[in-house]
Length: 433
Image 1 (spheres, rainbow, N blue to C red):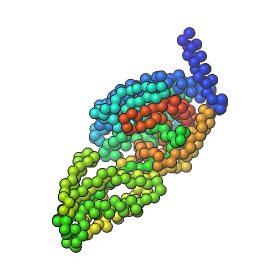
Image 2 (cartoon, rainbow, N blue to C red):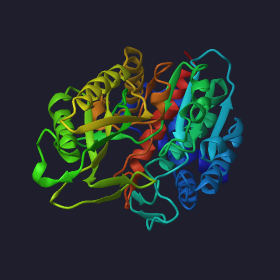
Image 3 (cartoon, rainbow, N blue to C red):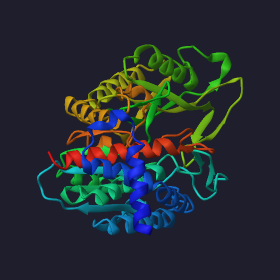
Image 4 (cartoon, rainbow, N blue to C red):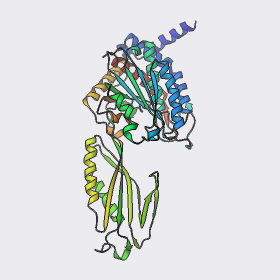
């Protein structure tokens, strides 16, 4: 009786697909039915993951999420290993490998286990209200992990997973990359070298209510400008002997950045400024202190900010222009510029554009609208950029929702279902050619 009920439910779910979804094969119809029937299981997994705080610096919590997710991959027939990252000050990464028949494209699935919400965050708990769930990481990116697992489970139910060559890398430090980066992303890069395509399960982007396709991510690098100058009584400011002071030179630098660095796909933000007789950052680089008086020429000033670009060549070009601006100091001052490497850029490629075309063929088969290419200015940095020079890829196969990185973060359940269907069909098709 239970078997007959299950089969009847699967048939009803398949028949509920849009009429335009006539392009689905029998296996694809079984995948869609499996996705829809497995929604409650996906949500239960999501709730379990959200219950474990995995802020990047909560190393035991990140590892606990890794252990929970590892059981899902083992159940699907993956070989799973945990890669400790003590040398980078982070918890580690989960790597899972599924060996197929070698006939299709080798896939690298990318995601992360950590969130921005550390244990002291007041944003806690998991709440469902209708088609929306709220909780830390439901969107970025525990929802993406759940979509990845749900799609693979649907492939197994339909018999297509057995053909697929897949490597999964779930990093434990995407929100705060460990140092040195060469070690922190060693395993991700190694996986990319033996893959043909990369699929990034971070959040789905939407625009004007429409799901969008992403084939590019901008870089994210940090910079610090420090200025030291001759201090003294303000009555001598601008003179040949006293000079202009540190704050005037810092203002010159920042305004020259604003006027001279503007170009398409690049942004450069100033996030913090300090100046006075003395000025210093705190150890975390999130604040600091400065002291001074109105009648004393500022002896120290500093500013921190970020630089985001669409290509690594653009990054290097803008760095050179910033360095030239900083060198042109006002009298009595000397400035220095330091860069901290964060995420490289993932520029759009024709190979990635063709991959988006394959995703849109899946959309057509499912009766979904075409996913137009997202402007990369609307997308932040991410792990796939570390391997984009090695393999073409798609970004944003994960959860849809609102408020990622902020208290009140949400995930949309219908979007989870769409994304799980898309991912299952796309990966099954990639596994055959």
